[in-house]
Length: 415
Ligand code: HEM
Image (cartoon, rainbow, N blue to C red; front, top):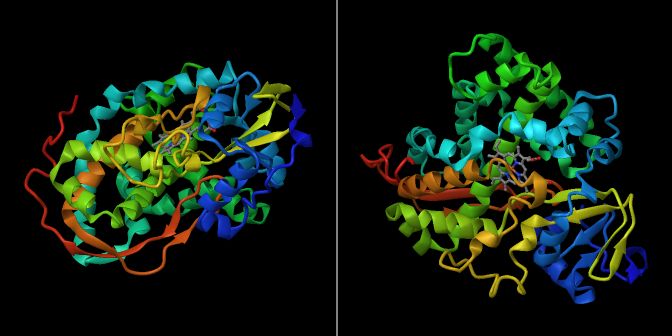
C-alpha cells in the first residue's frame, strides 16, 4: 500500500488555457505515468472513468468542498460564500436529503415529460427570431433556450430572462477558483438574490399556480425551508439549469459541425436525437467537480489522507479508451453511451438530468430543422477547465430553414 503523497505523478496544469483548449493530450500523458491518478495545484486528479465512478460513490468519505472553496475565493463574509457553504451540493445527510426532497418531485421523468410541449414552443419561438439571421454566435442563442424552460418550470416569467442572464453567466463561472473575480461574483449573486426575493414577494403565500415556486413557498411556510434556504434554492436551481445546459448544447453542436450527416438526420428523425444527445454527453460534457476527503480511505492500493482534495474531470471520463472503445469516434449507435459520468455519481447525482436531456432532445430536432448546413464562421474559444468547462465562442453561419407546421405538436408523446 502506498500513500498518494509518495507517488510520482504527472502534474496537470488545470488552470492553464492550453489545457482548457485541448485537455485530452494532457490526460493521456498523465495516464502514461500512472493509470488513474495525476497531481495538480488544486488537488489530486482522478484520470480514469472507472476510478472516477468508484470513488465518487464514496459519499461517506467525501464531501463537496463548499468551505474550502469559500476559503480559496476569500469569500467568507459574502452572500456568495454563505450560499456556497449552504447549498444542497455542499451539504451531507440529513440536511442534503431535506433540501433535495423539497424539489425532487418537479424533476422526475414524468414531471419533465409534461414540459416537452413548453420546450418545443420555447425553442420554436426563439428560432423564429434567430434562424432568419443566417449566422450568429451560437453561445448567445444557447444561453436563451434551456434557461427559459427552467423559468417556466419554476413559475417565473421567461421574458425577464435577459435581466438576469449576465448574472447567471458570472455565477456559473464562479467555481473556476479564481479569487480575483470575487467582487463581480458577489455583485452577480446579490443581483440574483434581489431577483428571487422579488419573485417570492410578488407570488405571495397563497399558492394556486400549481408550480415549483408555489411548492417551495409552501415548504417555507410549513417550516421545511428557512427564508434564506428558499432564496438560495431558487438561485441554485436557476444557476444549475442555466450554465451546464447552455454549455452542453454548444458542445454538442460543435461536435456535430463535423458531422453534417448526423445534423441532417436529427432534423428528420426525432427519436434519433435521443441517441445523439446521449452520445454527446459521452463525448464531451461541461461539469468538472471536486471533493474534499473527510476520512482516510484506500482505493486500489493507494491511501488518501483526510484533508486532501480530489478533482473529478467528468468532462473527460467518456474518452477513456479502456471504458469506451474508439472514444474519439462520435457514434450515436454506440452501445452504452449512457454509462457516461456527465451527471456525476453518488448522492449528488444531478437532480436535473431528465430535464437537461429532454431540453436537448426536443431542442436539437427543431434547431437542426431551422439551422441547416451549419458551418464554423470564426474562432472557437474555450472556458477555463476547473468548474464548468465548455465553449466560450462558437460563431456559425447556416442556411435558414422554414418553420414546419408540426413544430410545436407532439412529435414525441408527452408521457
Ligand atoms: C447538461 C446539463 C447538466 C449537467 C451536465 C449537469 C451536471 C451535474 C453534475 C455533474 C452534478 C453533480 C455534481 C457533484 O456531484 O459534485 C449535478 C448536480 C446537480 N444538478 Fe445538474 N447538470 C445539468 C443540468 C441540470 C439542470 C437543468 C438542473 C435543474 C435545476 C440541475 C440541477 C442539479 C442539482 C439540483 C444538483 C445537485 C444535486 C444534489 O446535490 O443532490 N442540473 N449536475
